[in-house]
Image (tube, rainbow, N blue to C red; front, side, top):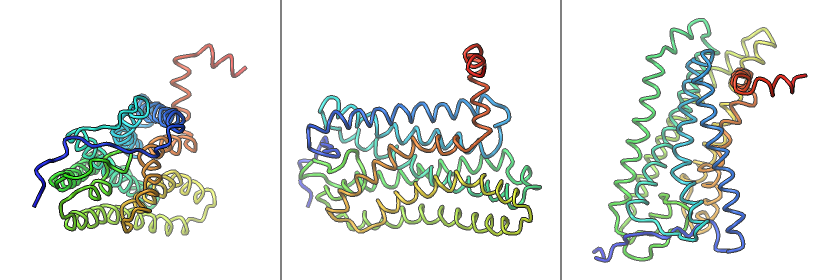
Length: 316
C-alpha cells in the first residue's frame, strides 16, 4: 500500500558533500559545458556553411552534434546552477523532464552511431555504389528512425519510473535524475521496473552495437582485401574517429546500466555518468575534427572570411 505523502521535489546530493570541492567542481563543469556548446555548435555551423560537407557522413555528424548538445544541456546547466547557488532541489516535474530528455537524446545517440557505422560500411565496402546506397532519403529515414526510437524509449522509461511512489526520503544519490538512483529511492515494488530497464536498455545497446560490430566486420574484411597500403590506410582513417567515439560511449553506458546495482556501484557509477553526460559531448567534436582534414579546411575558410587580415598576417 502506498503512502499518501508523495515527494513533490527531490534533492540531488551531487558528486560530493565536501564544501571545499564545490568551487573547483563548478569551474570544471562550467568549462566543460562551454567547450561542449562551442564545439558542437561550431561543428554544426561548419557543416552547414560548407557545401563540400553536405554528404551523408557529415549530415549524420551534424545530428550527432545536436544530440550531444541536447543531452548535455539536460544535465550540465542544473549541475552548474546547483554548485553555484547551493540549492540542490529539483521539482518532481523538473526531474521527470530532465530524465525524459536525457534518456531520449542518449538513446538517439546509440542509433545515430549505428547509422554512422552503416554509412562507413557503405563507403568502404561498396564505394562505387555509395551515392545510390546513402541517398538523401536513406539518411532522412535513418535519422528520423533514430529520433523516434530514442524518444519512444524515453517515454517508456519516464512513464514506468514516475508511476512509482516516492514516499520516503527524497534525496537522490546522484547529480541528476537518473534511473538507478530513482529506482533505489522508490518505496514501490521496483522489480518490474528493473526488468524493464535491463531488457529495454539491453535491447537498445546490444542491437545498435550489433549493427556496429557487423558493419565493422565487413569493413575489416574489405580492408584486408585491398592491395594498396595507401588504400588500407585511407579506409582505416575514415573509421578511426567513429570507432573511438563508439568505444568511449558504449563502454560508459554498459558500465553504468548493465551491471548489478549496489551502493558501491552507485558511487562509482557517478564517475561513469560524468563521463558520458558531460565529457563525451565535449570530446565528440574534437574526435571528429582533429583527424579530419575536410573539417579543418572548412573551419579555416570560415575564419579566413571573418578575420582575413589577421590570418594572412599569421601566415607570413
